[in-house]
Image: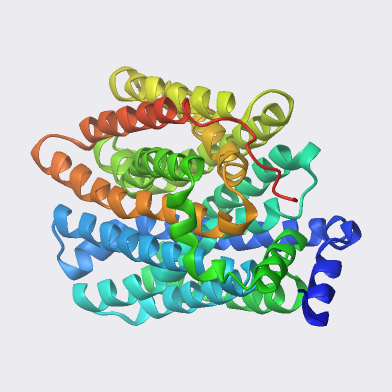
Length: 418
């Protein structure tokens, strides 16, 4: 029998105006959160050469720092996904954003490999929870425009890349890599805005009220729920493998692309920032296009085509680049690279029921992060033995495998507002 408190939660959760009237605010705050996320991810790649020189790191040690980051992200994301089903999406996102912003700022005070690694690991626990920003927004946005809005949301990550690339072009030559990390603590202010301005999604409140009313304490057994249900179990496994492949490519590329352009293509740092900004601006377009097409056609189809397209185009960059065509090749690749990233949030969120969505998305995505943590080390090893370009061929292969895995995931299994 429902208690008065449960009834109040349930009635509040089922008022459509609550989510419909606030989804734009949630989108804007979520967008800024992903800008901070993207900036943090790109910052390590941009400062890698300087950190290597100051700390005297080998390629493998530099790759290990990236892999340690992914390990922390995986642990934080898995725990954060479970906590978001128990405690709420908003609460977890706000605290996670505060943790990784302050942690990133603290990196500027480190003076050795061990200190940097320890602080980076702790701050990365918060970064891992940023996948839940997509889940939070997905539970607010109306079904008919969800893919487009979430595709636009994912451009926040690219915007973060562009912001930090522009800042690095100004800060790194004049003030050094430490100052860039000090500046990265600013988004802690955004964490407070999210905590106090955004209510929990209606679907989550309804699911939580149903748990309390039934007294089954299902919130304590989210993974048990997932693995008892044949469909949920299969979706969890498929998304774990798809995440392993796409994130291996994503983090391998982001960690080593600046070094590849600077060391193997001999592009000056001043020009390098222009190349990378152009690439990620075009990725904006790819993500928005993917969201628009996902609403009108198929989330799965768009994701698969994006993964396969990026995979097939990477060898073109490696083997057929010249000084005259590299900028064009990078722009075209940026578009293809943005397509799967623009639709993965909607596609994955709609693969799971509300009661286990946070746990399932956070768990499968971050198990993928955990295993993909080997990618920066593998590329670092290949770079030492052969070349970074050869390592990027491996990146193309894993992009392709993510697309193949996604072929087995049905389209639009659940409406995230229900």
